[in-house]
Structure formats: structure tokens, C-alpha cells
Image (tube, rainbow, N blue to C red; front, side):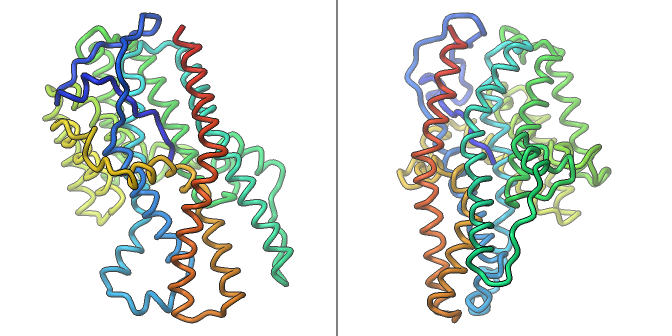
Length: 384
């Protein structure tokens, strides 16, 4: 899961088919009052909280408590990790928005990835250090537990988001999504460069339409079950469709003439997901449809614009990256102090979620906010 800039000009907020002034690279930028995609931000927050709930149950921390829960609650918790599918779709939407009005050149692509790196790397690097620190600390505190076996090559691979490509184990299990996000960004921006997209033309030109439609159709090979592997370990291609349906939601909002094709694509994915019992694919299609519908009806700027949800969305990246070691540490230390009963399971479960939220807030303030400001400074320099 990766955050993205979700600010938009004011006049986009008052039309279901926005026609705000396009910003072409090198041209003067229109003066406008920024808004945020409140609905997108809320979904990110809810999705991150879903992953926290999932790891609380999947980690085997509350077996006694879960035995008292209704079956539908247990099933919901066990499937809450599938909200990762929504993260990928949201990323496609906001990345498509962030570059939609720009002509993509190789220098632009390099600057775009530099801004993404400035935005994403500091919290991610902090999360790597946190996971390693907790692993070493637990080996010192807990009798009989070995020190983590982390090689120099594994660490370097993590710093460049390529650990799975080189068959290294993840230092923190959640990092696999961040690695895919980086590949999504690169692939999408390079597709726009190859297509020589022209923001002044309808649908940014016929080559752009052909290339993006072709990419979307090729991406169907995985949710349809025709391919079940990638061309290399850790490849983005098996999950490429989950990002592209988010891109399509944005393009269909901006260009209503492609809505029939887009909805047909979503229906194909949803039907295959139902027939194959693939919950991940189904959530991707459902999330993309809701995202398009909410945008097309002009509610993306106001729906779920509640302070608590918006704050949860703001810290969602930090929460996603850091919650796993915090959750494990709270349960382990808590049970060492109080013992392990159903009552204490419930107590430390609440405590683990509260601790994860508080810790993520601190990381957001101390690490993520400076990275956001750095990315914005780079963007302003590049826009001059």
C-alpha cells in the first residue's frame, strides 16, 4: 500500500464530468484551491484498519476470543486482509490523476519516480529498521529465541524494493505490496511515455488508447486464470489488473465515452472472480466500480469526509508499514505480564490496535510528514 497525492482543482468538485484546465508540463499552472478526494482517503483508512484486524487474528494472538465470536465475525476478520486489493485499486486512481494532464517524457518519468521515492522511502526505511530492531530485541529478551538471520544482500534488496525478485524473505510480511506498487508506477508511466500521450487530444491520443486498452486486456489473463505466475519472482503482472482498474475508474470518470468498455472489463473480472472463488479479484472489481460511481456522481470530494476517517486515511501508510511488529510486541509483552486468558486476549487486542494507531500517528508526524514536504518541494522546483 502506498499513499499518493489526492489534491484536485476546485472546479473538478462541482462537475461529475470535470473539465478543469489541463496542466501541460512546462506551461503555467492554473490557480485553484486544492481539495482532496475524501472518499478515497477514507477507503485507505478503512483498508489499513482492516489489515490491522487481519493480522491480529491471523497471527494467532486471540484464539480463545475468536472461539466466542459469531461465525460471520470470524469470517470477516479472516478475510479483512483482502482490503489490500482496494489499496492497489486506489493507487491506480490517484496515480492516474496525478499525471493525467501532463505529457510524459523520460525526464518527466525520472522526476516523477524521484518524487515518489522522496514520498515513500523514509517511512518504508523506518519500517525496515523497526522490524529488525524488534526482532533483535525479542531475541535478547525471550529465552531460546534466535537472532534474526538477515544477510547484507537481503537488506540491500529491501532498500531497492527487489527482495522477492532475488528470492529473499520479507523482513516484514507487508512489504510485498510496496514492492509491487513501485513496479505499478514504473509500468504505467512508461506506457504513457511509449504512447506519446498528448493531454490536448481526446483521450490523450489514439496511441494512448490502444496501448492502455491492450495493457488492460493482457492483465485479464491473470484474474481469468489463464496465467497463474509472473515472468519473474515478485512480478507485478499477476496483480497488474488491480491497479489498472483503478486507472480505468479515473479515465472513465474523466471520459464518459469509455464507460461501456470499462464496465464490461469490471463485469468480466467480477464474473471470473465469482466462478473461481477469488475474493481478491472480486474486491478489486467492486472497489473500482464504487470508485468510478462515486466520482461520476460528484461525491468523491465529500462522501465520508469525517475527521476521524480522514485522519485514519492520512496515517494509513504509516499504520500499514508499522502495525505488524507493534501488534506482535504488545501481545507478547502483555501475555508475559498478565498471563493468557480470554479476558486478557480481549484486553490486549484492544491495546494492540490502540498502540498501533498511536505509534503510526507518531511515525506520520515525525517521518512521513517531512517526506511529504520534501516531495512537494521537489514538485515545485520541477514545475518552475
